[in-house]
Structure formats: structure tokens, C-alpha cells
Amino acid sequence: MNPFRLSGRYIFISFIAVVLSFFFHELAHWITGELLGYKMGMSFNKTFYIGGDPVSKSHEMWVSAAGPFFTLLQAFVFFLWLRKYRNENLYPFLFFAFYMRLLAGVLNFIHLNDEGRISAWLGIGNFTISIFVCSLLLWLVYKISKENKYPFKFQWITFLLVMFFSSVVILSDQYLHLRIIR
Image 1 (cartoon, helix red, strand yellow):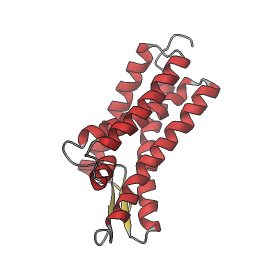
Image 2 (cartoon, helix red, strand yellow):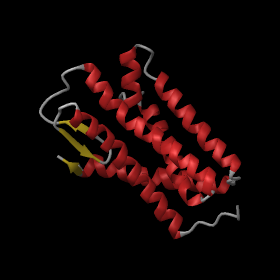
Image 3 (cartoon, rainbow, N blue to C red):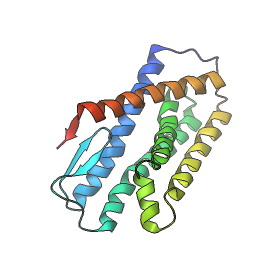
């Protein structure tokens, strides 16, 4: 790998990685809820039931699991692409999957997120599945970073970009109440 130089292209790809990752994570929740017969709404950082709560706790858990499942699938696909093509521009798609689930896991201290709700429902503590998912994603990030010899500067810049863009998405969603699907 040549020495990393931050470019407008990499910044834009990082932005796209964050937005698409949020979108497809939430879309997975939305599709699952709709397939289970619920009317669902969706924003970039939230999927919600319209007109009532789920009929069963198991339905709620399937809807909760769909987003992290898609995020894990995304991480594995981009891990394999990064391994095959060694294109550093794909890295934000893998890194953000880890960052997104880590942030959700930490926020379980405040309000249970996807893996936290499932862990609590299974009676295995609020953090068990979050720790497992984050550990798996961290291992993928670490492995591809070592294999592709990504320097610390590259890792740090990627972290700052995904943190900034995810903050923009989360705060926009929280304060502007942007709905994608009603």
C-alpha cells in the first residue's frame, strides 16, 4: 500500500459508506417487520411500528435481529472484497460496520439497542450479544488491516470520518425527524 493521502474521493466514499450502512441496516428492520405483518416506518437511524406494538416478543426480536444481521453480512462481504481486491476505498464499509455496532453496544447502558434487547430477552445479560458481535467485527477489521498493511494514520482518519458522518446522520435524524418510509 502506498502512503495514505486523504482525498476528497475517500471522504465522499466514507460518507456514502455511513449513509448506506445506516439505510440498509434500518431497511432490514423495516422489511422484517413488514413481512411479519406490521405497518412500519423508517428513518436513517430508527425503524418503528406504526399503529401499535408487535403482537409477540419473538416478532420484536426478529425485527431487532434483522439490522445487525445485515450489518454482519455487509462486514463479511466487504472483508472478502478487501481481501481479494485490496482497494482501500472499500475499507469504510467494513470499518463502519464495526463502529456502528460498537456505538450501539455502548449505548445499551442508556437504552437497549438491537443486540441488547435480544440478549435481555434471552436472559443472557444486556451486553452478551453486543460483545460477541463487536468482537467478531473487530477481528475482521484487525485481520484486514494487518493483511493489507493499513497504516495507523489511515485507521485514524477513517475513524474520524465515520464518527463525524455518523454523528451528522444520528443528530439529523434526532432533531430533523427525517422519515424515509412512513
